[in-house]
Length: 187
Image (tube, rainbow, N blue to C red; front, side):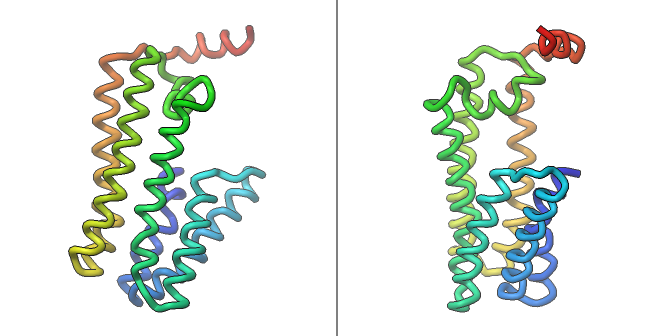
């Protein structure tokens, strides 16, 4: 369910594009992002960084797309979002005690620091590659191909990458047992 919630603006962008074109889709995505952030706040009384970064980018780049009637701005949004994530994952290796991927997964998976660092770097490289792939498709193919790639291609590649990460982790980790985790939290 969280997966669908996170991709809510992208899904609405895709549907709106099919019904009304790139500028209608951009407006819908801006509104959907505001709704997503607002709903999350009402439900959890906090914000998710990913939602805020995406909202900021869609607000600025989507707004520029609508004001100048130039799709180039919105086509840069997935690239900039992926590159922001790459920078955050890379920065996490130097700021704090754990890389970001370890912070996100260490409550269910135990692994050596070297494994977490390799996994984190692989996410950095993945985000950089996804940003570059978006630019390639956006500027070498027609608009509809880019919209389809944005939804199906990027989501599919992300899904395959996560599966590859799971196979990598399976060779190097020990799963945290829920009882052991609960006991560790009491100490």
